[in-house]
Length: 621
Figure 1 (cartoon, helix red, strand yellow):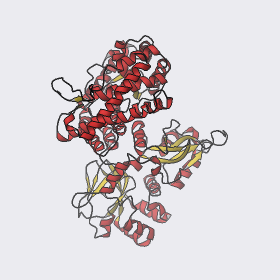
Figure 2 (tube, helix red, strand yellow; figure 1 turned 90 degrees about the horizontal axis):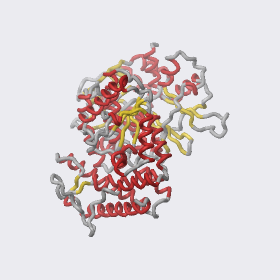
Figure 3 (cartoon, one colour; figure 1 turned 180 degrees about the vertical axis):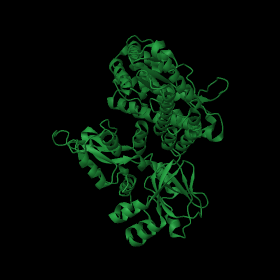
Figure 4 (cartoon, one colour; figure 1 turned 120 degrees about the horizontal axis):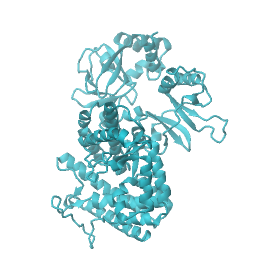
């Protein structure tokens, strides 16, 4: 057999109904398959088109439709289509379109019919189908919504396939082939009893190709030599949405699921993506396929559609903020890749930072860009700055074309002040914390929400650790931060009625960001810095604050609920404006709210007001 046919055979062994077939029938299928490639958006089958092969998806995403145009099914790797047409006169019954670039295996009609007639299991599978293949569009839509509330453990379909770290790569590959899996969890063996059975790493097909075959290593070496050890994991009780966000953020396809530090399963990207339609996963996938800034800018409507969909499907603010931040982060990463393609490799290492709402995973559809560059300490402006200024311009100009407006305060990597070596950044934070003034911190507080986007991410971790160490218990610094946090107050009058903006264009409205979410974020940040919380997201910071027991009983939970009410009011307003073609901003007209919404928004503002009073007293600002 040719190498390509061997690969096809191994693929068939990993997917139903083929993995249940005898070896001889599998071999016959593998030798007969033709391969077709379809670009994203292209038609694969049209209604009543002559059909001569069963279609099996090797990679990509395909949607099939009813005659009236309604979505019938959405299929990913291992999905089958065209079988109904082969059984009914060799005419396509369901039109099919490639959603992503797709590679399709074509199993000739004669081979399909032969196995269908001779193998009862295969015939039953094709005629009845498994529940995943028979999902209607309505069921798919429900599953999409379930992503927002279902726990990740519901995706576990089998025990994780694992092997100890002392086993050889050959043994691991054999096990992967026997079990029909493309990745293997690596566990510590009993040489270290306290760690035995816990996760040491993960090994995938790609690891075998790139770390064993390509370098010419021998298969007898232990799996620990080629496994990936910088692991991203998720706990079994966390939500599927959180798994999706982790995969987006770290660009991984397999995510180990843990229960008390022990692996209980693996969630694959395909497990999630098969349920999703117009969503953040597809948007991010599209971002990394674009070959120019102009192409990236065409995705703006898709980003807006994703935002509106989530707002209308009752996602909470944390989910929406995380998804929008993941999309924004992906735009930055792709723009950086395009910049390096144009400029060549960087002369010295660097780290590109996201600041503010993107760093906190709280980004919405109306947002500007806040970013910075950390450069290696060997940075010489005469030798290196021309490159990094050009890179910063490409990224910032590209972000502006993709809907992220320039920062009016100049907090961007194009500003020389925010394009500095690591030692300068360390000096910045040390100076801000140890010799603070309210005015200086007013312009620098955004830097206390930072997250690495690309490059030497460990530098961002070092800065965050410096902040945690120096800010905690520094009363003068915390008092200055508090003064700034109290400058913006909720829009409530003496009699608990709304106090309207009076700034001309948005007369008689509430700026829900300036008077709501922004002071809430500032307040939470001060408490988080005071207790040494390493969280960046406001909800995660609140969890740490509640656990630290520094607020009066129940106040932390009240703050969490109030923040959700205010944030969702802002989200709903933006989504509605987008759908009706109005200007999308942060302003709300109270007369457009229901009595129920006004009541809850006033209650949330009241919680914020009381929390600010406590903050002022607590830090003696």
